[in-house]
Amino acid sequence: MRRLLPFLLAAVAAPAAAHEVWIERDATGPARIYLGEPAQPVPDGGDPEFHRLKAPLVFLADPARPLATTRRTDHLEAAPGGVGDVRARDDNVFEPWASDGVQQGAIFYARAGRSETEARLDLELVPVTPGADRFTVRFRGQPLPGATVNVITPGRWQKAFKADGDGRVDVPDMGAGRYILGVTHGETKAGTVAGKPVAKLMHVSTLSFLR
Figure 1 (cartoon, rainbow, N blue to C red):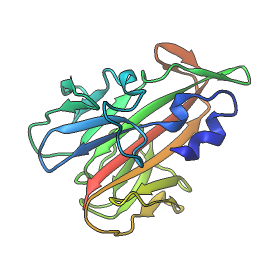
Figure 2 (figure 1 turned 90 degrees about the vertical axis):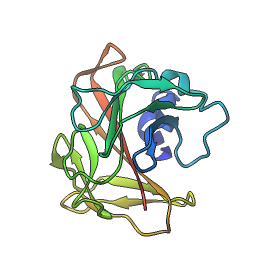
Figure 3 (figure 1 turned 180 degrees about the vertical axis):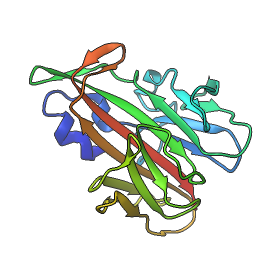
């Protein structure tokens, strides 16, 4: 997530500037929730900041029905127990930081799967049809034109793509394996991060799928 550095490091070297939350799931197996840099191999024992990922809201279609998580060595694990895309949200990962006297904070979102065409997170990459290679970036349900989407392929090749006027972006076929997409969006709006008030929000969202 180095694309965030110019925005966030203007004030402090916030750990949030180099981290994302993402989910990996194989077929209908357990969902593995990570905190770190998805373009890099997960270190033995997890990312140095992994301890900050404590209790994300993990769910399938309904956030009112959260899934329990179990802490593993380098990730959290949830058992969805069936088909469906898995999502997570966490606004308690990193403490807010000050930039020019203004408090800012990051909210992290993640999704695994591309079978559903509805957005259920504030910032989400949504396939235009089930299983599609074209996605719409949606913020609070509306398309986000011009958003920058970072694509990481199974071979860890990565490239940034700009969404079109309808907020859509096509993901190239670079072979079989897991793809991880990431997008960020800044918002000048009061909110709460880690239980503290902030004046600006940085929304950070990922989506992973198997091809």
